[in-house]
Length: 542
Image (tube, rainbow, N blue to C red; front, side, top):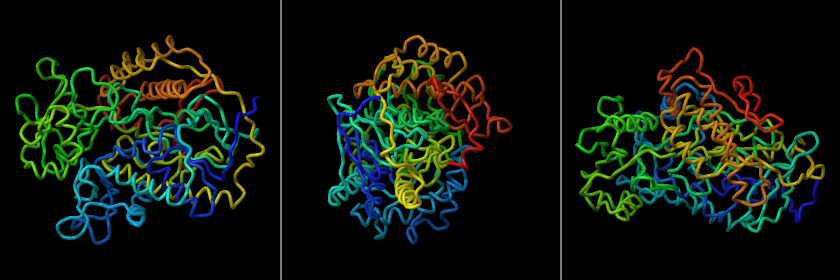
């Protein structure tokens, strides 16, 4: 055991400054809780700011004729390919209108339509125009701006440049705080009876991603090491249209929001032939997993597999319309030397959203007392095997608020541990793989199109290349988290011998409802190895 170099105390520690974390922090403070938000980078550096499309929501009096919450639920269930929890889907989507209203009350400004109501667009998998947006294609940036402004105005403390290492627990196994490292590797402990993980996803597990560099699966690792299970980690959604900037692109690549397709753009190959024609009834507006897989197949077939991208043709939009509606995409295209008004945009799929995560209910509670999760790091049952476009910001707004209320209720009922009973351990030692090698093998063998042989290659690389290291810096914490996330994903993907949603097995190309219409969970053994289980019995207990 070791004493921390410094300590702080709160009722609730929120890890992450994205939409879910800040929403939870603001609501918890309004409920009278002492809140501390911690983030490993600057407050503005989370995933939320990069969300282009919008918020999928059916607002009273501002929706298409015939659209409804029920129809939004139905679209979500179709996209989730049989693995959504329908009750969770219904609760979260039904909470959307009130959540957006609260966000607007905080100062978030959404784009108006010509009729005076909010402008709405349509994205992949949606059967109606129900996605509200801000700044054309800068919705995440506006949501983040409004939440950060409210946080600062409300004097919610944010501890920047501190990375979460591991949960601090009592002898009985309840979470009672969080061990962190500052930018210089100095350890400290944030004592709290409740810790909410809102750390985003794991896009940096792959070579090319829409995610920023901070998306390294940290929350998944903290939860697993704390004894919490994760579910559906084999389902990683690849966004179909990320700007192609040349062979070997690495790190965060500019997103080309599917709202461009919602405004009539179509995918074509180098010859001008339509990619999605005849593939799906919704054609270019099919769910993301369908479009990404179709592009991947098309690239493999074109010119003997030489092509590594296709094109998004939006030249039907005039210059003024494109610049106004999609300023972020327009600027990224020009930077890459492409004028989207006069020539098709080169695009390719890249890692986008994790569909699974830490098992939790719609109130953010996990099976570990005192540990909560919200946003992309969580698996509430909303997404199943594939995320419906623009449900992500919606989930963060709704579940973030509900999680704060759950913490307040659990505190009041005496369900949480006394932080004074916490046992502070030394910094952990964990397997760490070389990030570059890990990203290369994951992108080659565990992206879109997997088979048993390739997954075994990844497993072997992880087995022979990892080195146990003491997690005494942010880089080591991140690389250990990516290594653990990779191991969990490979274990789940190897076991799921079918193709469903984002999980495409070329050796098992068909969906198998008789055996696999269920989620898998992953836990760690006492020695830190991922083991698989069935989520069915656990979901209701979370």
